[in-house]
Image (cartoon, rainbow, N blue to C red; front, side, top):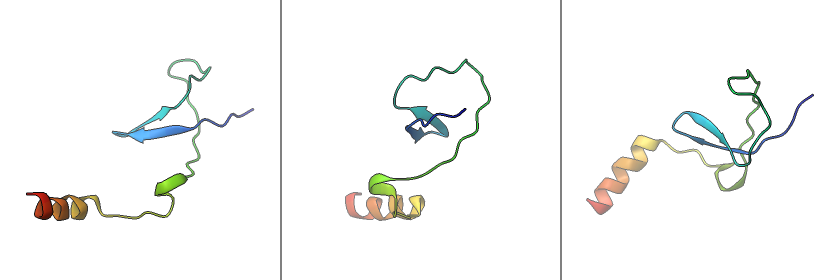
Length: 57
């Protein structure tokens, strides 16, 4: 049986938006579906940093 868990990906870790009833260190399988504002957004992070640095110093 599976559940759907909404999460945010930060610093290499998926962080659930709500508490989940799963034992610590349990092995799970994750299927990632990006949605919302970032769904169709593709950007080179380093290029973005360089451009921001040019504009804002």
